Length: 188
Image (tube, rainbow, N blue to C red; front, side):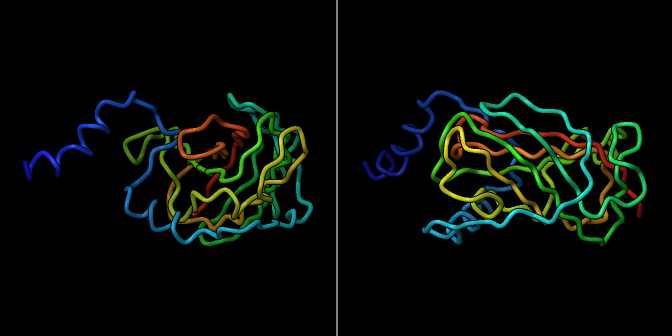
């Protein structure tokens, strides 16, 4: 009977339908720690400074992205053929203007780095240092059909990448309400 009480919650979880998370998480412990540290109240994020408008690709989301800027845009002009250069150890502000189709009170954020050379064994990976609490990057609650700003203060680490994808979902397993990929060049 004791073993059944221990295994019952796991069996109940196993019976749930499989849902894919929008991005790979390094481990659940760091996710829970970041989530428990999140503010419970409403938080307003000031839009980032104006920057260089850059080329972007919208991903599958229930919302639209109308623009992306990067400040500073070192070298390059922000186009797909001449992306902004990110230098190891430098700080950048990435600002995404979006209009979600759905509202969200506790949005979740994800940042994936892309590496065409697959030097880390995969073509994309979760970028270290991000918070999954979307309210750290956009004003909460997110209001449907209202233009909003998503501002990410980016610190480059010593890792190779040639693109970044920013994703905002309504909650942990909810649909994406903002998704944009940008090309970048990395310089160590």
